[in-house]
Length: 223
Image (cartoon, rainbow, N blue to C red; front, side, top):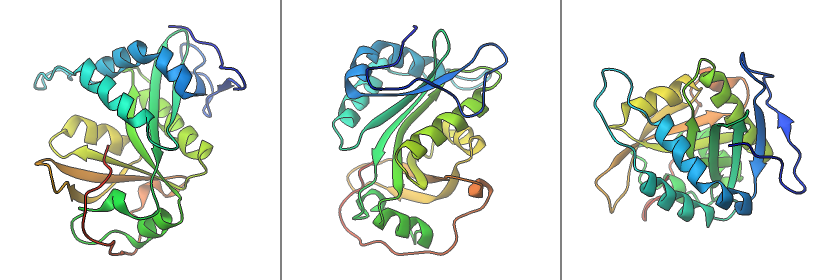
């Protein structure tokens, strides 16, 4: 798949420069452009979720991904950034976290104070998914795509929820700079999630300091 810039959008090289094979370009897509790439994105999802050698086989569901994408595209502030050469190499998308704290409802224990403060001030962006095609520089590419999405939204912190049983996804996110801050349970579901955050800047190696208790009740708007 080869795609050019959308109308009114500039196509820019990634923050880290070209890869070892070809330059990788990052670009933000409108909802209209996302619609035209649904099948390509589903293909990227399946490839990015490939089971590593020796791991238990889990067949990624294209349709489940497309259903989630459709639902996420309806959220206020939805945004997507893709990485491409002559084909689609990576993608991240999500939406701003509401300042009422509903994203964190169901969080066990207390939330780091800095996370709560950034949530209230509108400085947190929820990543619904991050998909990177396996290649030698996939870690660098993931970090660039994440940074671009946060920067575009002037957000200071990324947030995401991952099924605690999905060890492959958790290991990948941690290697891309995400910090695990605890568990979160949906009141109406059986799944327990790990809550992860991604500070924008140089603090990716430090756990956010301080704690804050968010209001109880209800369920989170999850990934």
